[in-house]
Length: 532
Ligand code: ADP
Ligand code: MG
Ligand code: ZN
Image (tube, rainbow, N blue to C red; front, top):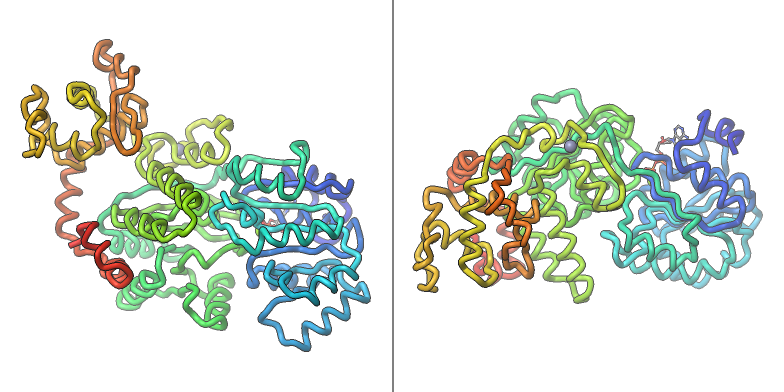
């Protein structure tokens, strides 16, 4: 196997995880590899594919990916081809003839291809020795990027009788189990290396001036290549227009652009003809650009899988790179809105849970890298990374007094209440339930802004002193150590910061693009959400 690696790829050694996965495949056992972005997942099925001879069928979700991979293989002297819907009929026929003659070692296809009878017939005539599922999380309903066509393929390829190699960078425990059971992969053939990326510095910035922040960042990093992700096409266009006004050179990518334009823009970015890419999440899967120095999320993504995958496109060359998440409360509402449109109720609940975890990431005071890694693998023990915003920001505000006030207020209220009830009572705001106004804790923190109080509540939640069940807060028994034993609580939420931010917030105009989207689709919803 090392010989193949050296001969065709020019690399001396396998990376962590590659060797074991390749061995399973060569022994004819199906395997699952969970390796970080840029970890070298392609080689895990390409090297055994070459060793096994015959044909390796690679199922890949994106047409743009196939071409790059096939070009790279061909350049290395390995016969490879792809079949997809964008090809000319004559070209496809020529490849089919070549396949029957056994001229290719690799065939890349999109899952939709299997819908065609003649394609399935073609497969039955080929000498397929290995079936690879790239971006295998797309198979699972519990994955963040579930594609039904991907799942359907499974039944159809299993009958070909070849072992499977599934690879992905983002699999939670559920997804992993799902892939294993669908592809009949036993526990001992799962290889999971840490998906930790030491060179990435994660930052969370709840700024209310995203535009300014992004422009400043780019101006400060003029020679660096970077990606800015926004949620909607409209936001991408709006950012692009703004960048034009500020004469910042950039390119864009979203599903609304014609295929040729997308391909052209992608190439411009990948070949360093243009250093800034503004895109929706349609951009980037499988792109092998090593020198991306930063990935900025202009909006909150739907879940941590998406976030880690997108952010992970920074620093594939191992050099220090930044992953910055900007977010506002509006982003959460936009994602909730998208999730609300999900048909299947089970999936909707799952998405809600994932969004909740994503929101928690923005609020945690723990190491951000650790939070991300433990989301995927709760057993991995990590030291603080030392470079994320939370590691760099000392928890230096002593909120013990505030904690005592909040906990005792919550205790006196006797029943679990939602956040806004607690904040209103403790701030002494007028309130429909008069019995709360007689509490001795009513108005105990009236000098604090609501935002600041929310920051304290978050810290209490993350330290486990308060429970949140169905959106209602109650005091956890462990709060005893705060109330009775003088346990000190530190946070990096400064009430003063919060007050400043609140002032800025009221001055900032609502993101028009976002508002338009919401207004058009469901007017009443916008009202319900009280967007001005
Ligand atoms: P991903 O896991 O994200 O799919 P790729 O398969 O695209 O990663 O590989 C990322 C880069 O790492 C490629 O340029 C690839 O050639 C390189 N690579 C893979 N395996 C090795 C190795 N054993 N030694 C050195 N470079 C490798
Ligand atoms: Mg890949
Ligand atoms: Zn950290």
